[in-house]
Amino acid sequence: MSVWLAGTFNLFASVSIILVNKQIASVCGFHFILTLLFLNFVTTGTVLECLVRSGNLEVKHLPERERWLIAFMAMFTVLLNNASNEANSVGFYQITKLLIIPTVICIERLGGIWREYSTAIVLSLFVASLGVAIATISDFEVNWRGSILAGLSVVATAKYQILQSGKQHEHNVSAMQITYSVSWPQSFVGFCAAMLLDVFVPSVKEYMLLRHGGLLDHEFKSSADVGWILACCGIAVVMNISTYGILGKTSPVTYQVLGQLKTCLIIGFGYLFFDAKVPANWLLVRFSGAAVAMAGILSYAFIKNSEQKRKD
Figure 1 (cartoon, rainbow, N blue to C red):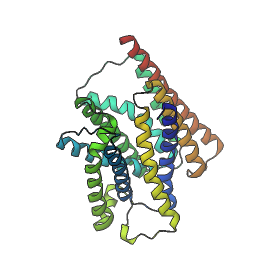
Figure 2 (spheres, rainbow, N blue to C red; figure 1 turned 60 degrees about the vertical axis):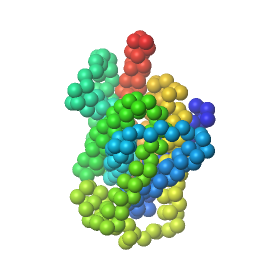
Figure 3 (tube, rainbow, N blue to C red; figure 1 turned 180 degrees about the horizontal axis):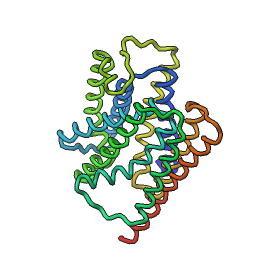
Figure 4 (cartoon, rainbow, N blue to C red; figure 1 turned 90 degrees about the vertical axis):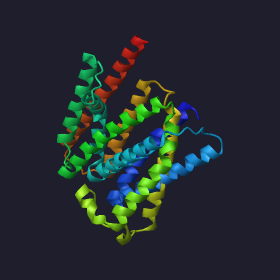
C-alpha cells in the first residue's frame, strides 16, 4: 500500500470512527461501550489473524505477562476515550486530545525520566495548552462528568502510549505485531468486561461515570442501528491497518500535519452534525482556540524534527 493511499484511508477512517461512535451513542442510544469495544477488538483480531495465516504478517509475541498488561491498559484507554466522546461535544473531545503530548512529558518526569526540552518546545506546548483552554471555555456543552472523563482519557492515553512505545522498542516488534500479539487477550478482556458490566451488573457503570442500563433491556430503534455498529467495526480495522501503512514511512512533521487535518475535520463535522449550535461570536472563540492549539502542536512537530536533525 502506498503512503498516499494509506494516508487517505487513515484520514477517512480516523475522522469517521469518531463521528460514527458519536452517532451510535447519541443518536442510536446504544450506550454499551464495552460491548462495542469487544466487537471492535474481535473484528480487528480476526483480520490480523487472516493476515498471519496468509503469510502477510510475521508473528512476534510479547512475553505473556506483558501481553495481558497491554491488553488491560488498551481496554481501559479506549473505554475512557469512547466514554469521553459520548459525554462531551465532538469538538471538546477532540481538542482535549491535543493535551496528550504535554501529559506524556509530565508523566515521564513524575516517573523520574528527565528529558531536556528547549525553550521553543516548552513555548509551543504552552501555546497548545492555551488554545485548548480558550476552546474549552467557549463550549456550551462542557459538564462535570464529561470533563472528568476527558481528563482521565488524556492521562490514560498518554500512559498507554508510553507503555506501548517502551515495550515495542524493548522487544523489537512493529506496531502491527504488537497489536496482533495483544488482540486476543484484548478480546477476552473486552468480553469479560462487557458480560460483567453490560449484562450481569449494569448498575455498577453509574459509579464509573458510564451510562446506566443493561444490554438485555436495550431495544434497537431500527435496523440502521445495527448497520452503524457494523460500520464502526469495519472502520476500526481500516484505521488500524492504514496507520501501520504510514507509521515509519512519513516524517514526524508530515504525520503531525495529517493529525491536525483530522482534528480540523472532526471539529468541523462534529459541530455540523452533533454539537449544540451556539452564537457566532462564541463559535469564533471556539474555532480560534482550536486553531491556536493546532498551531502549537504543529510548531512542536517542526521544532522537534529540526532539533532531531541537528543531533543526527
